Image 1 (cartoon, helix red, strand yellow):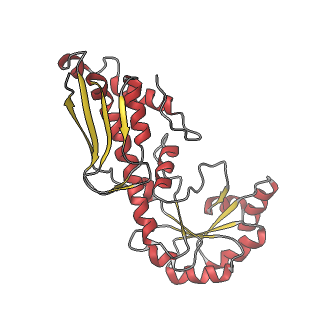
Image 2 (cartoon, helix red, strand yellow):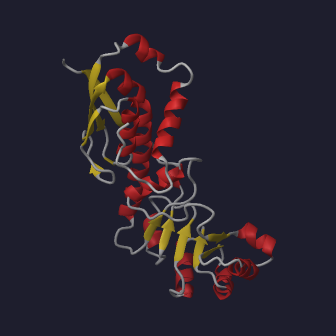
Length: 286
């Protein structure tokens, strides 16, 4: 099989494509195409966007088509991360009709989902432009798709936050309740040799104990804008500050203008609608 030139650390493209196609094909294969389409028929196709989007996932779509037709001819017309106006052609394809039809839904599902995330992300990034704040994603991802979904947020202009439970400590209220105090929770994280220690606080009076204990990052949870401003002033640049909780496109600008270093938004991966992308095939002339 001709490999698709797409390398995403922590993501096995071949395994993803194989598992996705296996889910769709089941034990009987594509019975519709096998019954209706002659084995030697060839199609040409154009994938296009029906709305203005930020593109993400085209190399993965290519891998689906190549998995079933290694000789497929593919011309990618737009790079991942680019803005595409409504009506933009994204990819041209020519190859075996049965193979292209069988791969179509898996390819489209992936591009629609990832482009939807990238498009919503770009809207949030644009909304806070000039504030100095950076948009972060979260771990609120579909199980098994985290690496892909966080790739899509990067294509939309966000910065990946924690990729998992392993790359930074995140001390929240339940951790504090068990440890007995913010100070004790942070001390235990430091004693474990953890360098990045994020502490979630939802009250101003929690800030100094967290900093004194050695927090390296403060997550200011569900604070209104005046409280955020006060928190940022109190922190005084000693550690990065992150606003989180209930952030929407309507509220993010004011939140960012409170002076926080970061704003994290779970809905980027939780609630982004699929982009309206289609793929139209035609019989290829002999």
